[in-house]
Image (cartoon, rainbow, N blue to C red; front, side):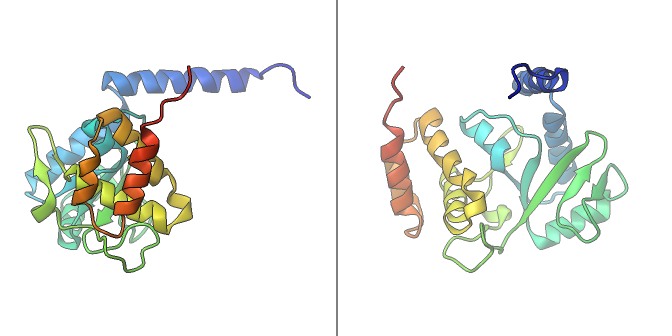
Length: 207
């Protein structure tokens, strides 16, 4: 049984800490990629909403991430690719929805309006059209917190490998101090799960 960390194991710990520090200082590659993506989409007047971990950070739950998730329509995705493939972005693989920001070495994962979250099978919750659903601020466009919660719950409830989406909702409840009444504005298919998580989130860990 090993009694000492290898130099490689130890270095990985310090490297991870350095990456987290850059993220929370707002200077990480993923944040540069986010700013570049938003500027590119707005330059082409493509409706979008930032979702995923970057949206959670904006809404009050701060956690490190290494990629950017964005919601587009199929037409918006086609327009983005026509404008920018080979000009700072490449497809992750031939014909993929997602792209890679080659300048910042960051994956851009694209969710498409009309598709279903999680297992991809039909369900009451669907990825909305960002032209209708997104709310814009000074820096970017996001989904309302209720819509983001619906998507994450529908994803985690239907796909076991997406269970982190359920944990994200609980942490968002805790960190953003969301009121229980948020659940009243969710789709009925995910509402009981939200109330279950909200109730659980009120229990504090013993120090």
